[in-house]
Length: 182
Image (cartoon, rainbow, N blue to C red; front, side, top):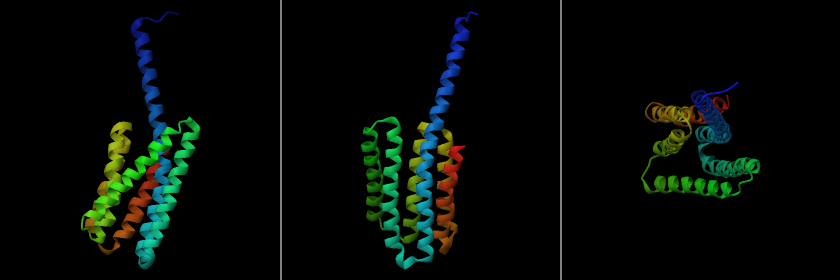
């Protein structure tokens, strides 16, 4: 059996397409770990804000510390698989830059509580959208949906904004993690 040039080119193109799709699925599976973690943290954090407002500061601080430690553990587990420890340093620096940038702007601007509640989910959505431009449309569409639902809560949820964010953003991140794992 001989294969001519055109058939070989078509076969190589098919293999490249499969390779690209597998890489995308592996990336989505990795991202889903972070969405599960942070979706759970945001679900409990926003719920605590609504029901236990006087204690929300210490609760959020504890949840953020747990989230950062969880993020480090997830990165570490992914790096152990690839044996590339440079990724850990780069990921840690990325997380610090994102948190630092967001904290800087949220403290610099004179935001009310509704703006502060909406800032982080929309900021995350923006970052996920940019990430999606590089790894796949599904991530970008997911980010746009999360962004739109966060803004809808800002404008329409009223005094229930924290519960809206718990269900829509926290629950949406968990659902997004499940969806990306499919």
